[in-house]
Length: 329
Image (cartoon, rainbow, N blue to C red; front, side):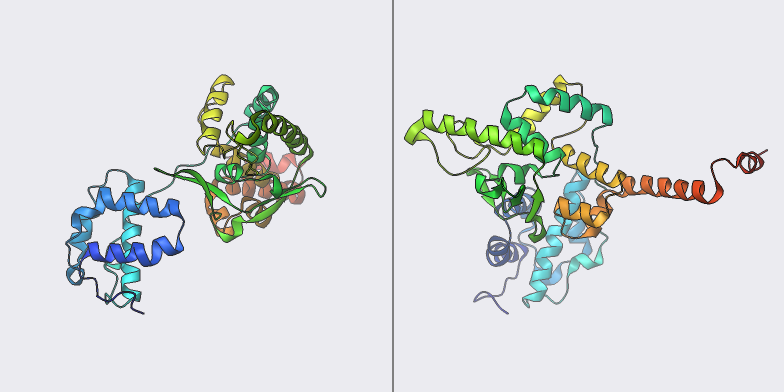
């Protein structure tokens, strides 16, 4: 189906059509901003490239100079997505990206808190303001993303039935500030159990917020946010990360970001034999394969444990003769 009254002939014209008829209509604002930045910094210089002559050499001249492996991979995927729509809309016969290899990028292994660090954090957290206590437990007990935490409203909490719902995610765009949008994927919309420790903190936080609202009067932005600025406006999306950085430093925790609290929750669920389908549902992953790929290292450790359990069961832990006979000499 043709979307415009003319057929794009250059990479720049295809980008404009792609942004107008796909990205801005179908994707989140933060994603659109990300694509816009990739274009401006890494691809725009090739705007005049004719679509009917795009060859591997042209793509390598765009992609190869990008220094970061992650960004290089992102530029390739953006170009491939653009060309894919170009083919679908009848502007191109094939996707030029199919003729080059995907730039390699392996995401660094996610670091989780150790058991000692968890004890240190849970001991120290009770001295923090209630809003930070709540953010901490939403992340480390319920595996919420920072964007999901900041996007929570009081109407999402059911104190009677002890559950809460994730219905939106906070985001930030230059010149706009913090706002809420759809969740990362449809499966990110989910309802989770509200543990007692978090429930009690939220009740206290709600009462504290009511007092703040009374003090501010009609200057209070009554928008139902749980996590707010002083005047009731939605909290800045960067606040949880900034708070955690200082808190972690004060308590001897190194190398774990605020997002690492979510990974801590997932890691210990898997280590404690929670079914991977359940872990995936708690995390709000689009599919189980995402969970499996993200936590491969943790799952490999549980495989070792599983085999050792079977070895103890089948062979018996008291069969020392067998153990001695199997030593290498």
